[in-house]
Length: 264
Image (cartoon, rainbow, N blue to C red; front, top):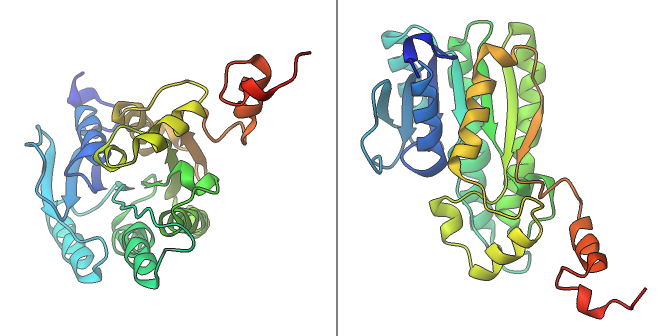
């Protein structure tokens, strides 16, 4: 595709957590569609970025780091048209294991980070700008890692409040909720977790970063100009059935519960 005629041509877009995985894919997709992308992360990029992407170091939990980025953006571009709050971490401790320190560490990245980003960059955003917060299927379910799940539920609240507060300025705020996406984060999960999650996914497969990135491009682009406060799962149907897939599979005789059903 020709970036000079892309769907987000000329837009200045910041993507956090862009050094690898989903963030890197989002940054690349936006650049292919003509955006001037600032790929922000505390880590060095896993591989060199292509044309249209500038790397900047950013600790999303640090207000001073955001202020420094905002100052650079003001001097370099004079504005910001899009912010993708993609940076996130997980911690898989359960309810009886999670500590106060665990909770604080995860929430600092997954909730405080997006809040600081919105606070520091929204003053640079003209009408028509767009913020995309990356949630999780965990934000729509009772997913067992308490620190991670509560952080993503909190991010939903932040997104809703921000869409209300920033709407009068013409700034949109939406949330995407990826399911099981093949990334370095999910690669560290136990095989049993992967198998159980895919068994509950109607499309029957894991997602890829390329399943998420086009939606981010759409939400940053003018094509979504009347969409704000929306929450969009990208999860192969995982959150849509509310647990009914296991029942359906059992009754069809195709699931792990089917062995115990009575005939007829």
